[in-house]
Image (cartoon, rainbow, N blue to C red):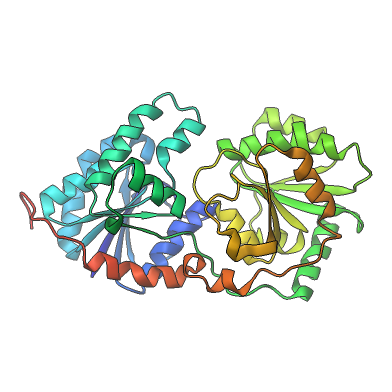
Length: 383
């Protein structure tokens, strides 16, 4: 089987969790079938040689202009004898419909969020229009992948897509067992040295793209709610914040707080996942599964999260390794932070690594089986 993936944004070099997820998806998919990837032209450092990549598309913000590349996509489909078209996110769903009409090839949407919810959270004025578009393309697609059960259930109930035309394919991980205690200790010592942190201080981690609305909201929670509560105690701690695109306004606010260490983007985030005492996820703006929580748990880091912040992650699998607090209950959130060093230490359960929904390789193994049984409509013009 030959799969054409269409990605409307930058994934190379893969720095953010979402970028890594898509890049890994096609890397592992290429082990199951032949993959051809059509990406936006801002993908400049493509290092994966396991499949053929064409980077000529317009980025998603100019996505409508890709109508001029329909002939080139058709040529690519015919040249590589493509069997299935897979589109990342719903943005380019309309092109999947057009390509199916013109070539007879079924198309699949690999959804990473309920995008209209994300646009609502981001306060995009046109989010209501996108709701209609998103419903339309998912109803037209031959199959839909979702990142968590909550998203799939929403699509089945609200969009009326058929259950048999969808499945959950969450973000996976390359890590299949917890790191050694010695390895975690060495990482902690390096962090103490790098950032001049005292041995008796508890170290928390927060990371992500800092121009993303849920992450911006989390920073406001730290500054306005959680840290003021902790400042009234004798608790010694540091919150390390890693990520790009921090606004000048927020930078000024966090610079006033000695409890926050802002690193900017770090190339080796695993150092912090292994060396910090816990990962914090105080967001109440839920949009899909949080890839960083999967990475933190895979690195055997305890997670303290609001219920919304842990959306999409099965707490029956993570067990005591993920501490959940009700949304907006910052007193309880701060209390869990204080207890983190004195609570019994738990290791990320084996079930987390072994479970199908958190194993990238196992999840990918099942994809071609579903794609092979997709109905194949007849193209109107080309075959």
